[in-house]
Image (cartoon, rainbow, N blue to C red; front, side, top):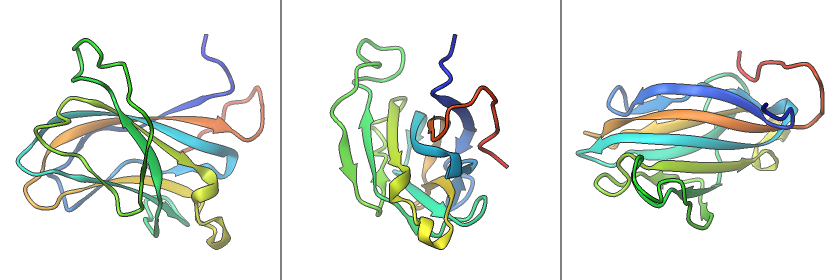
Length: 161
């Protein structure tokens, strides 16, 4: 049984890094959540290295303020021993994280965002991941978020539009 103190939200199945210069996940409205832990399965990264950015915005799919976050990678590619053993949390500036091709292909990445880092003063309640293509990036990502609710409730509500 899944505990009610965590909300799981699928945010992107097969986000293709080569589709556009900016490849967004679905957005989460964070007004009812303290923080978000994203599980990002990377696949087939090659040619160039995409950059992961985290944004808050005042609306769905609006990327206004780049946010700092914490991240850590699994210890090996998926299906290998230690793929589920994660390193230490590392701080990432709002300038983003380069997903180095040839290094993190098929790795699981955890990204943690504290809701307190969002620009709530400007009504930026929406949280979005952006996988940017510096030119020639290839690969995909599957993204699932685990959210910590602000209020306990027996009723499930959506965090999406």
